[in-house]
Image (tube, rainbow, N blue to C red; front, side, top):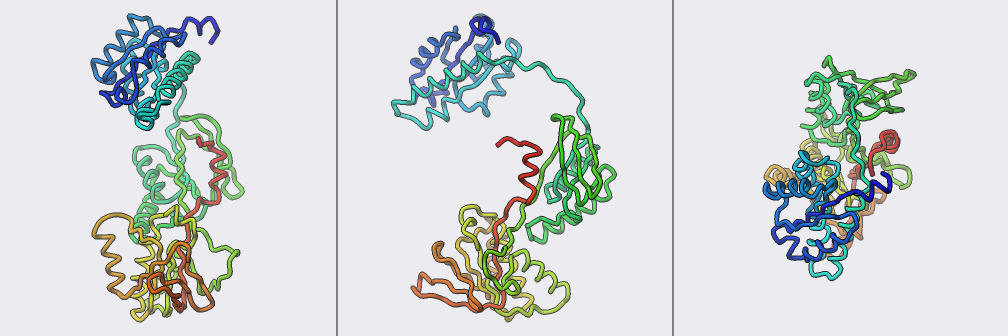
Length: 417
């Protein structure tokens, strides 16, 4: 926009008092006067509720009578009202020329009785006006929209959305890095596995879904509605035209790695122990392991970032281990027990585990259980002495981490930070 056009911009500033929520914390009359001193501002007003039907009508009248070509509403959060106000002014003003400055959540709510609040609110209004004066309405965009979608991942959410799109008569390309749908899903609930199996069978039979195994995206170009994706599948490079991209990568369980000493024949991750229990159950044999120790939140990071599935899974595994070997001694060391929700079903599993004879032992955050050659040692804060529990099998609940290709995928798609 040229300097001459900038000088001719006529901006109106409407201050919302929000029925007192803003006016009780800020001197809206002083704000109105300060806004009127901004060079581009030719009209200011205070409104109790500009979002009301009467308030919207007065804004439209002001735009027409004052010949305004930019409007700033100083009120609550843009995500709450910006769409409403832009629709309200559309008959008399290009909606791109209306902005909202948040002086309620950013100032009135958090800086009440603060002497600097008025200056901050005035600064937000001044910045909003500056943004409006340099805004050009975007020209209308038109182009083709490809009726096809690329779904990356094969967890339960990915399979669900792929089927929903395909059932809506949209072509779907489902991308899976491994050779099996749902192979990387960390949720070990039986119902989840059952749903994945059912949806996988439906997807493989669906005429509108192309499932690409052992594949990964290597390049993407175009814009929303019309992308061109290049996909590597073995030695082949495939090219697809798509209109949308859905990323539904599952998390993966962090491996134990080689940085710590463990007897890997006796120390397993929760996922590895699940496979062991499934194999024993499928064979019809009794679980031979006698002394089982489970350590929840086996890494410090899990204290701050809970996966919300480990505790439930561990409790179910403890119950299943007792069912497969009633004489097994199962001890659960935990820091916090997160049961995944509120309700009898979650509490019932915990009660059932205790009924089966599973021992639960809480440890302190600064005194993690220590795995030795044949025992797990932990400090009993109630008794004030160490406790030593023998084991044949130690099961560690490891944190969930992003898949290995997450950074590569993020770099290709360039999502906002």
